[in-house]
Structures are given as C-alpha cells and as structure tokens.
Image (cartoon, rainbow, N blue to C red):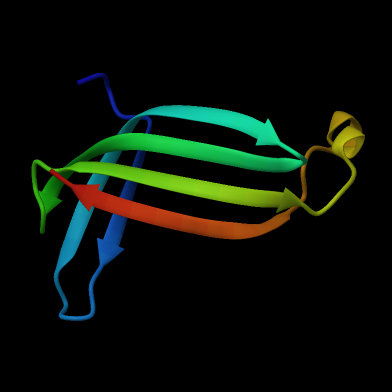
Length: 85
C-alpha cells in the first residue's frame, strides 16, 4: 500500500469507530458535477482490513471559471461511504 494521503475516522452509533486510510483517488467532472472517488483500507477498528471507498458528488457553488481568480469557496453535494471485503 502507498503512503496514505488522507485519513478519516468514522464514528458509529454504538460508540465504535473505524480509521480509514485512503491511498488513491480519481476526480472527474460530468455535466457540471464534480465526482471524487477515494479508495483505501480500514486500518484500525471495526472492519479492519476491509476495502473502503468514498464517493463524493458535488455541485459547485460558483461558475466554473471563478476558481481561476479566487479558488473554490464552496459546493453542495452528497457523499457515500462503502466498507466491504
């Protein structure tokens, strides 16, 4: 596994948690929607050793060219996390 670039802690309703280390990502833009898919592994806690994938679909809060001057200031969207063998 490559050195993880991003880590995420997931807290469950029963007080348990999972630590996920993402080591790869893909970003595409489809019909104005930015889609990011990150892949990695649960490295600690519930599901340790299982593959993890987070998909985020975001609508920009600004016109596409706005980022050239000031950077992106926000977006709206949905995220989905999958942990599976």
